[in-house]
Length: 205
Ligand SMILES: [Zn+2]
Ligand SMILES: [Zn+2]
Image (cartoon, rainbow, N blue to C red):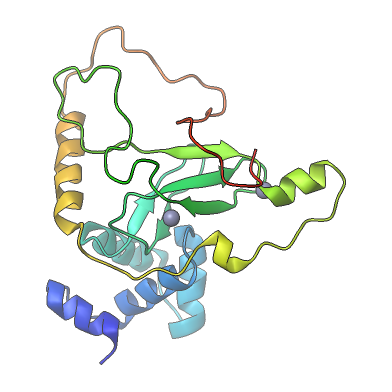
């Protein structure tokens, strides 16, 4: 019995070859879109419909085994590093996505200027910029090789945040049912700026 099979049983998720293959694919290709994951799954188990991949991704996300991130202007990305409130660096030029540890160490990481009576439990932080490879290309140098370990360090899959995920989802559902706030500031149409100012990892701009 594989570790994933045991994990599914522990969480009461019905074990299917498709769900197992989808989880393996997300583990092998973190920060991938559903399309990339579907290709990976097909190379492993053969035919699978896109809808079946979406369904499996939905179940695994809901149960806290994987995390879904939704960068502005990009399809959703899935990863298996869960439970640690880490953030992401995304290259505006090539889309490379890199994990970066939580700036503060715990949610919500950022202090809101005012909370409007909300109990805030999460701040989504994405650092937008240019990766070292694209910086080098812009300045006419060769694209340096980036070690895979820098792109997504190995990490154990944990399920410790399952409760907080559920809480966050409930919070989001509640916030969805709120009446629209008059004169709400609409999001500017131009490309997203840095969501958070913080220390920049070496080589990014
Ligand atoms: Zn880049
Ligand atoms: Zn990540």
